[in-house]
Length: 146
Image (cartoon, rainbow, N blue to C red; front, side):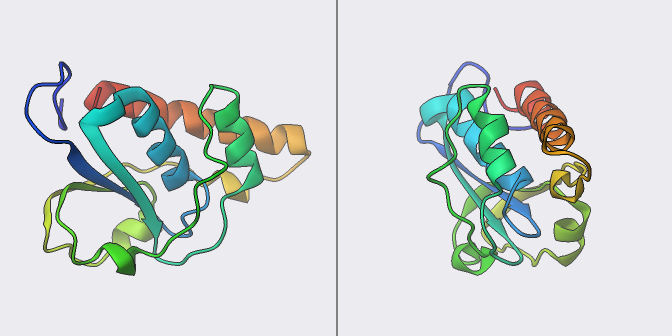
């Protein structure tokens, strides 16, 4: 286990920041999943090297597992540069390569997930890609965080 404490030991919530290029799918799903699975043990944020919008298919895929991310918004990482974080986790290769140094981060991790927003085909085929990436993110969070 890399992060946190599986049995909730320790005092205050650990701050975690998930980063992706556009903060539209992977980092948004990771934020929603960790908040849902770990409750008060983590203070969870997400951001991107650019801000765009939360993808409707990401919202739909998360709703299927009982996690509502419809109220989340896409944000740039600049707002978090001065904040202290226990962990900064990049969830795409582009963000990992372009991510600035976070002086307040105790540890930086990289989890590489395919970009579901690049999926092609019918809406159902594209949604299937969002589901697969959602499940991969959830497995990684459950393995390392909760």
